[in-house]
Image 1 (spheres, rainbow, N blue to C red):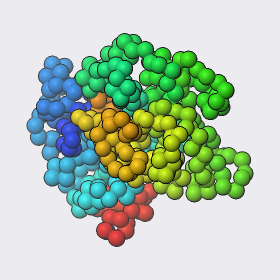
Image 2 (cartoon, rainbow, N blue to C red):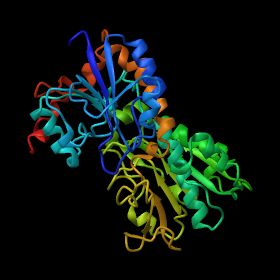
Image 3 (tube, one colour):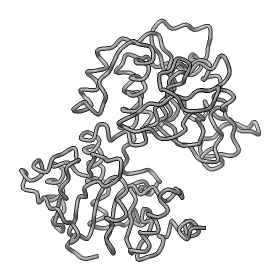
Image 4 (cartoon, helix red, strand yellow):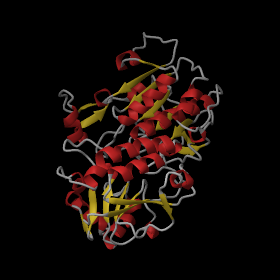
Length: 406
């Protein structure tokens, strides 16, 4: 690569629009200071959570055209007509898991000889992801779940996260409500689940052990939640002891043991990572049983046609809820009396774009840009490069048939 890089911060072109950005104005100033071998340009945007003048007031260059830049940095997928030949891009491409809807995007990377560096695969030598929006998905997903519960039971109305200035205003909204003795279960143990648990704690929900959650003799007169790591919702088919790494490597050798929670929880917040070879959490038939208790399912993970049968489609920030009728297995009004209210927004951090952008930008500045614009002795960039010079990257050659339309 050249010693001097022209770097562009992209306006988001995905539909529906996303208001996040890779760098806030203050972080863009820090970028210029930390990486003197770059020239930074901010592409003008009328939807970004940070206005153009917030950048220009700090002496940053805001431009309409970034085609002169070597490296272009966004958040979500770039619209195919906007992609420029022979450039290096950083964004979430959602192509490496053979997502059918983005096959044309992957093919365009190859046709235009684009170097595509995908945030999802930026990891350290131990495989730990370097940047993610997980916490923010958890915050907003759990908050939306509480909104749905309040509307469904005519208890309270919370201001939408998208209408709050920042996370502190969301926390202030939670201070206004007092939940009844509701029982909530979370699946997952990573950043997303942590974000969800923070929201529940702020809402006055007390954490209890999974064993106590399922113990019918324990009656709680206050709201409670339990967070389930995988050993609480799957077990080995062969009866051997649970091993987390074995589960990750061999998900098909496990079966679900989640069903008892469907009869004990009022709200389910799904924050797990799910492999397509993993068992479903429960079935459509389970949902038809009289003692299926869950009436609100906030599916933050949002795996369509996956482990949660009521997740029929993604919902949107504009319309976050839809209903699922167990008897018909079809979508209905979200707050119909006998329906299960589903929240399945697939870009939840976009509801708090300013906070989420700052958190994400911090990871880029500290962990990614030093190797992108300096020495990458651990191969971080290589491991995340899906395409380069019209070919699939070293770690993504398995996509060959998919890219060829097979």
